[in-house]
Every structure is written in structure tokens, then in C-alpha cells.
Image (cartoon, rainbow, N blue to C red; front, side, top):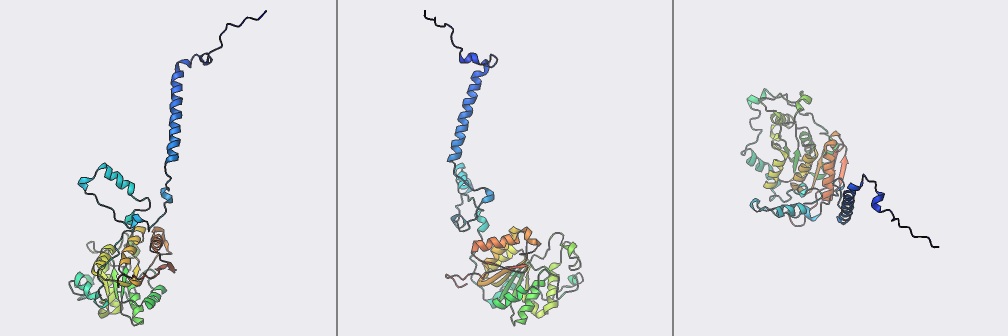
Length: 349
């Protein structure tokens, strides 16, 4: 006798789910489906996206096209969302091109023997600032003039070495303070039978807190005037005499405005010392702006390559500039010296 087939139906899948979860089963299933779809789309989009360098790993490519090609300016009235998006898309991922954009072409060169007359005419109404110096109201306020004022690395061997090798007719100094470096360069030049024009660019305002450190070397301020310019001039007269002082000319302006004016007027230098601002951006701007007024074959050098000031960026600025221009940096004690400026084939400067 055949056994009779069982009439009991197999348990359904829903019966395997606890009764308390059955009302939520549909919602849970929907959530899992949405999660799976979203995860899959995320994987697909990340794999299709082109890889880009992290900001901290950005490689500087100074010779790339975006560093040399000028961008197109869109009038403000015509700016649209599409224009803004296009500009954002074309903006370089390496450092902004403005970091490398400095004027390189300057005016027609002024003859070396006309440099001082040109500057006296344009800056001092044709009269030497040493004429009738010091005025009575300032004489009593100044410290006794020092023929060897205080400075930093102002008598290093690099000065004599470069002046002897370059034999400059015009020297530009960025950052003069009390005149220590300028007067040393004047003395070295005199020993070599040279008489260069030494242009000392400084706003002669000092910096916040400098008086606490150099109180014995600087006069007391008067009505907010630091009196560093007349003190500098007094030191120059004491060191080289009133007649020769005219060749150590103070340019009492910011380095950026003074260098822009020298470039515009075609005043070039054979030797440039950079020793003004010590943060990266100040040093970077000074080096780039000064490079434009350095004659081909001339040499640029500066201080604070191996000092505490390097922490604020002097060495970084010098090293980056050398890489951009394809130059070499030669450390010289606390100083840095760049290889001579290459000659150009398309002009005579």
C-alpha cells in the first residue's frame, strides 16, 4: 500500500520571519535596495574621476603655459555664471600665476654717469638731499654720527669679493637702516679705485619694536617720525665726507615703489644687495622686482640665507627664484649669491 502524500504545505518565507518584524519587512527591503544602488554609483563615480594632486603635493611648474600667457579680462557687466565657472575651471592648480608675474622689461637704460643726476631731478627737485644738511631742527635730535654704524653681516667678505669681480658703476641696496653695509661698500670701492653710485632703498621707518632693541643706536622718535633718514645721512657724511656723500644716495621709499620707478626710468644696477623684509612674500617680491633692474652680467646677493631669519622665508624665496630662473645659489657665510644674470640676444641691456 502506497503511503499517502502529505497535505501539509511547507512553511512560507514570511512565516520564517518573526511576527514582530513582519510589518517592517517592506521598509527594510527598500532601504537595502537604495543603499546598494547608492554605494554602487559612488564606486563608479570615484573610479571615473581623474586623479589630481593633493594641495600639499602640488608640483611647481614655472615654465607651464598658464604662468606666461595672460588671461582674458571679462567686463564686470558681462560676467555670467558660465564665465565664472569657466574661469574657475581654467585656474591653475599649481601656485597662482600672479606669484610669477613680475615686470621684466624696463625703460631705455640711463648712462651710468647720468644715474645720480636723473634721480636727483626726479626725486629731489634737482638738489642733493645733503645740501645744507643737517637742518637746525634735526641736528639736536640725532645721535652722534657713527662712521661705522651698527649692522648685521655688513662687513662680510662677500662685499669685497663681488665688488672686485663685478666692478660696478651702480649699486642698489634694499634695506639700509643706519648705513653699515652701504658705507662698507663705499670703503671697499674706494680701496679699489672705484666710485659707484650707491642707491640705498629704505623707507627709513624701521619696524614695530625695533627701538627697544637698538635704543643706543637710533635717535628718539619725534612726533611719530623715527628720524632714521637724517641719522643715516649723518652717518654717511661722518664716514665719507660731505662731497663723497652725494654718491651714497638714500631713496626713502618702499622697495616695491622705488624699484618700479627705477625700472620705469631705465636706472639699472650692476650689483644689487637684497636685505629688506625677511618674510617669504617680501623677499620674493624684492628679488623679482630687483631682477628687472639688474644689468645682464650683473650679480644679485643678499643676507640671511643661514640665519634665524630663514625661518620666515628668505632662503625659500631665494631657492624658488633660482629654480624658476634656472640659476644657481652660492651660499657665502650668512649671505647668498645668485649666478650672474644671463645676457639677452635681442637687446643691448
